[in-house]
Length: 576
Ligand SMILES: Nc1nc2c(ncn2[C@@H]2O[C@H](COP(=O)(O)OP(=O)(O)OP(=O)(O)O)[C@@H](O)[C@H]2O)c(=O)[nH]1
Ligand SMILES: [Mg+2]
Image (tube, rainbow, N blue to C red; front, side, top):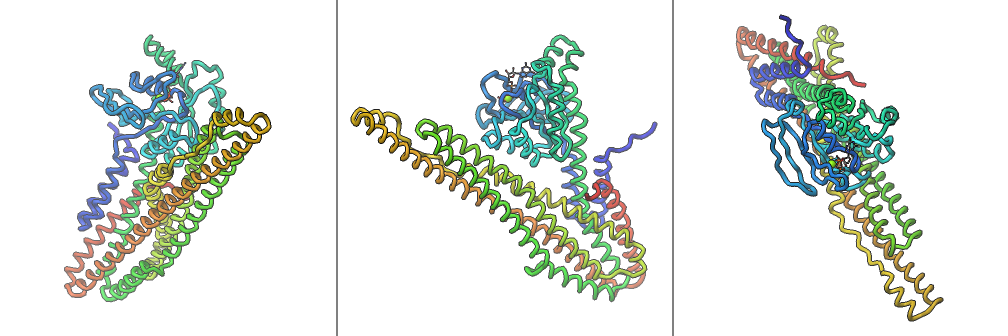
């Protein structure tokens, strides 16, 4: 019997376990525990898939037909208001609160769910910048993948693409399901067109044509041909195989990069310990120099700190500017609209559009902010990486040995850069996304304006007659427009101030999280240098036999860790 090749996830899990054991044996309990945490993240059994799309596009029906149940609401007119989460359970069970902002949790005995797949039905998004758009982003930020469900009757609109793009920033795994294909003979052509439109996103985004109705009919009549025609079995397979594989690849890469960052420091620690044992007196001088250098890397004047301040302040300025311009455009358009129309008749429309456009401005600004903050983080990570490389160089290598390992060393520096970079990404995602986006608009007060009704005008007409009436009407219209402009400016200013504040807080939070992370790296390295110094002093006092025993121990740990390190690095793709 031949043994099956382990999957990348299994291989990585085995390497992580091995690394944790080596570190625990070396007395490095905290580093071992860190790897255990990464292992838990890697082995996370659930994969959360959100179904998002325009109003009444068929999300609930599609999920129901996927699982052959009737759990998600599928009313023809009544919009869904609850988020419904469907996961595996031995027994059928539904719990939670229905209604707006409510969440329903359903447990179902289904093969797809038993794989750990959790399907999430999200209320329809009527357009970019709607409050439902915000809610969908909030849900998507907790998911591993998003399926955008829209009608097979038309190609993706600019508005669809804007919402899809915003979801893609938060949740990189994306697929599209075209629904209700039984109603639209041209669904295939629409699919081709949509695939073209989606090429502007970076990353793959497959499009599947589906019909919940055909699927139901196929299942009811036990007609497998009809079932296949519905496209739903294809979607089930896609989720169970391709999507799960893609999500797993993403997890493996992220966890591998994070583990390498931990292991890299532990290897540094062992390198220093070995040097200390080999030549205690020379090592002592070098380690002292390294300590000083690492301490200096923490002072406020350190180069990476300056870089951090500058890069983040550039990012903050760019994002604040972008926000300012977007809001100014929205305000200008609202003012033009007020100038063109009669606020006493059109106010509710003007108000609704203003809210929607401001929300969209903030959501788009957030996407830009994320890109800028990531760039800033990369710059700083590169700088610190270079500084730490200097420390390594300063510690000095045996010239002959250095020549031998030069290529290997270069490679490890390059890979180290990737791991810093990936660390940055997950911190950035976790630190500011939800807080920034959803607090900004909630804090702003309502848009109040007193618009006189036609009644006053009618009374004036009776009292004043024709010409005076026209004058009075114009005077009133002018006053109403002024009132409306004032209300719009006041409201816009409030949103603008709240968003600016949220943006600053968000950036400050990421900045201090990054600074802490970088400082911890230098603290760890310094503590390694301390340990090595202790080792050197002890080595100088112990007899040769004892020292050689200890040296053999450290060398064995070093070799073992280098081996797992290499195995783990095979899971990280090359830097672009
Ligand atoms: N012909 C046909 N009608 C469908 C299909 N899927 C859904 N519908 C109909 O489309 C309407 C909306 O379906 P839902 O499943 O409620 O859509 P939804 O996207 O969940 O709606 P919201 O969550 O309220 O945005 C209902 O009347 C469904 O019967 C389909 O495959 N074929
Ligand atoms: Mg629904």
